[in-house]
Picture 1 (cartoon, rainbow, N blue to C red):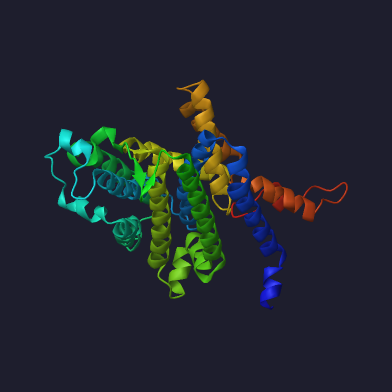
Picture 2: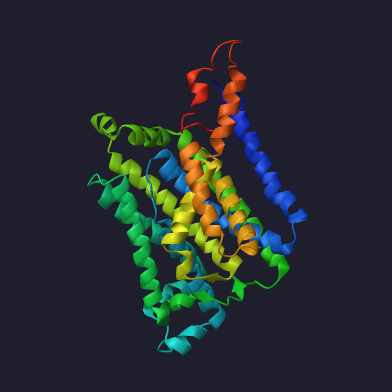
Amino acid sequence: MTVLDKLLAPGRTRTLAGFALAAVVLLAVAPVVLSPFRLSLLAKFLCLAMVAVGIGLAWGRGGLLTLGQGVYFGLGAYVMAMHLKLADAGPDGVPDFMLLYGTGEVPAWWEPMRSPGLTLLLVVLVPAALAGLLGWAVFTRRVRGAYFAILSQALAAAFAILLVGQQQTTGGTNGLNGFRGFFGYDLTDPANQRMLYLLAAVVLLVMVAIVRQLTVSRFGELLVAVRDGEDRVRFLGYDPAVVKTVAYVVAAVMASIGGALFVPIVGIISPADVGVVPSIGFLVGVAIGGRASLLGPVLGSVAVSWAQTSISEQFPSGWIYFQGALFIVVVAFLPGGLASLLGRWRRRRADPPEPGTAPPADARTAPEGSTP
């Protein structure tokens, strides 16, 4: 099959068309039809969707139920927030909150964040190193399933407690906020806010394209094989720990980049954004959208974020109950998420039942791995 044949194959053509449509909506339509406030809100949702893309790869494809992605989201966010606070303070300056709660001196481990280039590098390297060490230590000991989920959730809880206890260097429960600039651009300028939205949209599209390529590559096949039969993969000569660690690291880096963009867009990062509850919220969006599909995690995350904002405006204390009820309904009656509905519809169109006969078994029960 030639390259042109591959590009024009039905599945690939459908994927390219969907990707192009999403790009047009995000980059051309949304900036025109949405008000500056709604556009900034959508930019925040896109940052959270970046975390969901990584979870979709690790959980949906690799079966790694991670309940602690808030840790990596927070690492990227705090690294970026430290740089913005130092940039606002000026050369050799001290962030304002350190003058109130700290010793009036910048800690040594803050100093690397004075460099913009080093900050961008640390946004990727810090979560990658932590996820690599943790993943390798856990997966080589064959820890999986509920034990891995509990371990990752404990990590998120410990990280939030650590941030709260270090008020003189992390801002404590108040977090880091009050940023004025972003790499030399004034954050109060509406044009720069629009630029941040476009940057978030482009980064999200790139992440989706990367995950797409990973899932159709040899690595993607190995990841699914490890999920469905880890021992068989090991007997074939592959090391499942390496495959799972790579997927976990990719998910961590994506979460960190989402956190780094979240800071200038929202203007604050605090322990409340990185603890256990936000980590579970990331997972709920992925489950509702459809963890095994390509766009399900993105659409589910954006939809849940939008619903949270809308419902909280009307019923401030009602969102958490609605979220829990929605998660139970989806897990009980639609384990493949909302994306599986599209897969069922396609199969019914492709293979309609004969008149007077029962529908085929695969049309009644959609496999979880169905991809729209």
